[in-house]
Length: 271
Image (tube, rainbow, N blue to C red):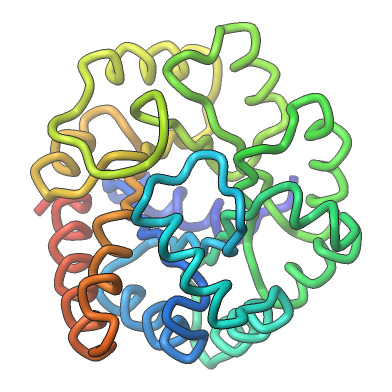
């Protein structure tokens, strides 16, 4: 596998005994111009990687906050080509280094045509795709296609994933492994599940991939606790909610998102 920005970020953080902070942002909520500003702002506020959700009408794992965000973006007419254009404008700006990773349904990839979607993703400057609903049976065929386009394929494991299935998922995964911290849909939770420590310890025995934990994380103290057991922390609903709370005042939403990212990134980085 050739190195890409995701590999570089995790290698750099490991050398500094630090961990990765990855915010999740919906593309096109409330519009793509705002998304472009938001991506630049969270990178400046300390994000190591940025996950960009491609709105989909039937997301399988997202809670009410992110589902509502996807619905707002779709109702405003966001299109995949527009998302790719927004991402391209960012990744081609001078000095840009932060890896951008798409969270995208396999349905959207398949409908567009796998090769076409991967080519557009590469041209836009994406570093990888998180595909929550990709059957592991097909991932083995698609991962080499993605590697040919310089893209990482990131798959998910959950607390209920069997050891045998986890091994199959890991065999197709590159970049990092997305570890779901709770069973069910995304959203903010209180505390860190006790079983998570055991789950991550078990995964460490079978892979050297960085382990990034997402789903249900919203507070700096949760993030700080996860530093002990994870290589990266993903936060989504807590950020997307800021947009929902300030639909008529995007500048206020942006300011609150920036402040929250700054605090969370500081906690992840050992502050």
